[in-house]
Length: 148
Image (cartoon, rainbow, N blue to C red; front, side, top):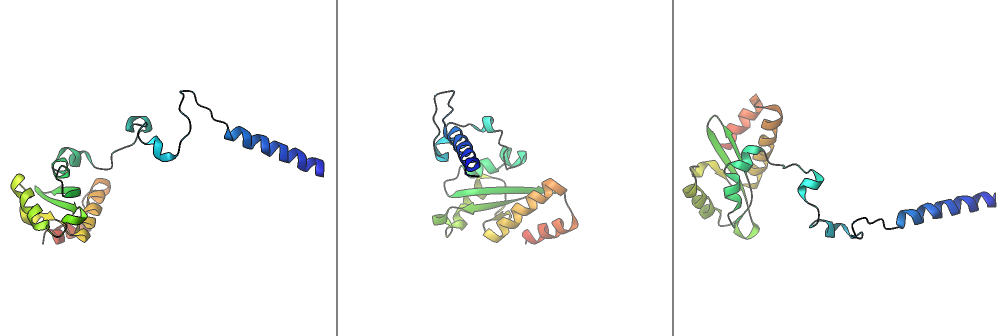
């Protein structure tokens, strides 16, 4: 019985030591996860963008260049566009002037720019639902509530 334990112990020790060896073909040694971020490109891992093609090519990149905006989303339905903004923490109280500035730079009316966090989350959900399932009656109802 003790001979069997010795064999199992040696075998598990051998497996453990084989797993701990460094196998580096290109000279890089294993580092913590944070150090891999600069050396791995998006093309190597095949990551997909989370935003839709329209959002990347439309008004969202223009809004993301603004120094006070941390995230933006836009949805267009029947020729009307609603833009949701997520402002950086120190600029949330001055959202009125940011909205006026965006409205003057773009063709979007002030009433169609949303900076309320609850409405922003609704806008995100509506965008995902529209991409996945299309426009339903419930979607249209929430869309009209957002425009109020």
